[in-house]
Image (tube, rainbow, N blue to C red; front, side, top):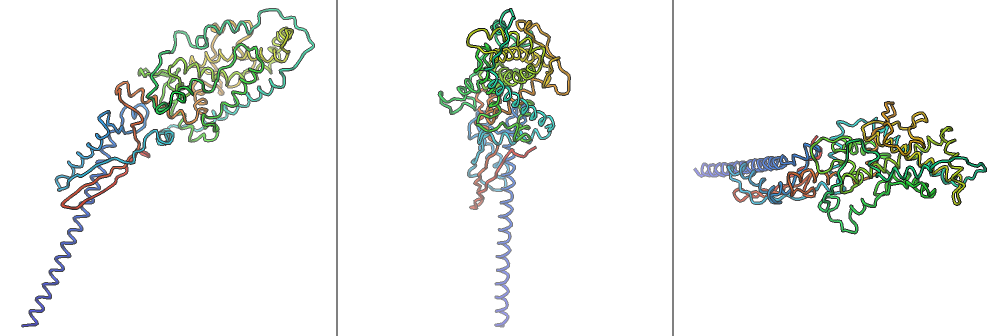
Length: 486
């Protein structure tokens, strides 16, 4: 009997132990099920929030951003939406939502818009034509060589004298051009019945200006940056030489580094072509009534109105094309014979050498030719990359009637259009164009949502959740990002 009692006790202890283990196992399984349920609910809540991306920016610019103020409702609105989602999903299982907070937010403006650029590259990978980008890169190098060559040639030839005497009679072509220029640069190059607005936009709240002091603002930099205009009096040979040297420096970005288009053509090309794909410019507008008509021109120049932005781009085209045209003119014997005749006469005046007069006249005629090219570009036509003497349009008789000359409409394989120049100038500007892209996006959205700010937009965040059930706490952190969503 005693043995039977001991066996009964022993078996009871074993059963109790097994029951304890079984209950513990059930508890462990239940804990892991609860944790898995919380984890899935957290992921669902995160995706629920991500689905509230800024729709207008995605539709127009193909970029996924989350407005952390939830369209002006306040920075706590997103946490509140996540809390309500979690409560709806988990409360029936006995969970209580203790706290929800969004941390580790990565703004679209961080690190010179690095996350924006990443999304741009992902989007443009679907559309990029690599060959076209490489062709433009070759053209950029050609422009640099032309300007450098002209600067050197002027430096060595400006003191040249000639023993020949000139018998030319007539009005100095430079004065004729000056009269023509009194109408204004854009008036000479804009197509008929077209124009651009001079109405200024408010820039103080734009991303590229936020946090900048008045004396050090980006607008101040834009107003004085990269003086790309040339001296159109063509009376000072040293100034002409300096203008040619501007071109050799224009391939550097605002950060002082080499232009993206040369050294990083593949990645930078995607980003730059994105600018031409998703933003308006003078020869391509979508009629949506955006605050700026010349958006790409704004990316390049950063001025506060369309008129100044377009004029800044036109000045850049002049600076790039004039050296190329001067090189063509200097190799044309017939045209140079006429220039020599005028230069010999002008060199009779004190203080000017034959060499200086020659190069100033070459520059004057090349500038006029460049204006005709720009008229053609702004009308949507192409011009030859490097023209021949037979394709030259302007002579000294027509230099005072530039708006009456026929536009070029070149159809050769080496033709370039206005869009090509914009690509080149975007490549020269460096990182500042991405902040200005954010400027344009903000201006467009604020037409419908006046309180919208790009600095409130995030591309990634971490959701920290504190959830409780029957005395058990579940703390979980969910990282969410729009990057790599293509």
